[in-house]
Length: 331
Ligand SMILES: *[C@@H]1O[C@H](CO)[C@@H](O)[C@H](O)[C@H]1NC(C)=O
Ligand SMILES: *[C@@H]1O[C@H](CO)[C@@H](O)[C@H](O)[C@H]1NC(C)=O
Ligand SMILES: *[C@@H]1O[C@H](CO)[C@@H](O)[C@H](O)[C@H]1NC(C)=O
Ligand SMILES: *[C@@H]1O[C@H](CO)[C@@H](O)[C@H](O)[C@H]1NC(C)=O
Image 1 (cartoon, rainbow, N blue to C red):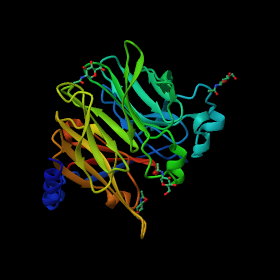
Image 2: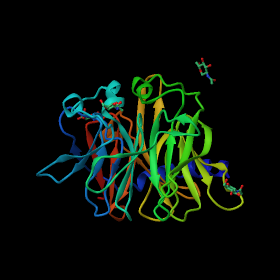
Image 3: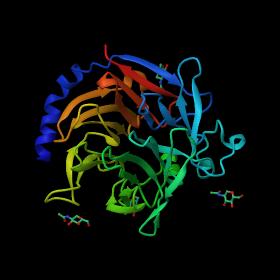
Image 4: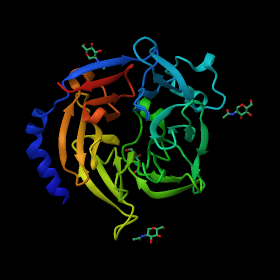
């Protein structure tokens, strides 16, 4: 099955590139000095985008006249004087650093993973977010990086990339690629309990529920693959490889068509050093539907998320290292 997917992927790459309809690009520049809009999301009224940035703030875009405004923050003692405008990752535990977002559109709550501080939630008015959890099975979270809300049950799935290295190592580019201590976890908003679904993972990220509630997808960055974790049925509680990729996957997000997803994938080459950023649109069976290359606008820069809105007409692109949110629209 996995072999077949690889074959299909390679075979169709030329035509998948040719089909790319997202040819128009604009960008929303962040306030001066800050970088790293790693997560990008719209709320239930299609307002935003909201994004988490290098100085720990969660910002909301209020249109061209107003620009970005403060929306929420995670660090309980965050000082605007110390933190606003910083790109210093060492201030992360003090200022906060939100790397993953997911809205529960039914109750109007934004779930946030702060990579240093834990899993948080904040309501539609923003302000200080509430800490929901910072450990599981007695082990403190170390590198939270992705989160998704189940649109029907309200459960929250999230990933901790590693118990051994954290976001500071990612920024310093000295994280060991042979690590396998990451965890996939689920938070139940009724019991307020966190359960570890799977551990021993290779820098997992990007978890996402399927709309039909049958599985969760997650990415293994260093293993260059997308995994499917079954929630129900005979394979419940087990994972299988859905798709092997030519590059390293980060976040996975549901596309607007049920059963389809966007994966941020970066091909890293060491000698000579280069990064080519892509979005892979895939379906529940691991078939690749579209490959969008972002190099024309992002050059050698990695991207972290591709988030589709507006019935598939708009792609928002988030990246840890740039100072803007990219927006691609069709033709
Ligand atoms: C926040 O400040 C209070 C009071 O100074 C202190 O007790 C607490 O430990 C601080 N919390 C964090 C996370 O720094
Ligand atoms: C990972 O690689 C490093 C450096 O190559 C090595 O020192 C370390 O023992 C390896 N760790 C594991 C868990 O294999
Ligand atoms: C999966 O785990 C749940 C909870 O631990 C258990 O109730 C269920 O029987 C398991 N399913 C299978 C197929 O192992
Ligand atoms: C990519 O290169 C162009 C042209 O040199 C430059 O304008 C742009 O800012 C670069 N983008 C990034 C993300 O580095």
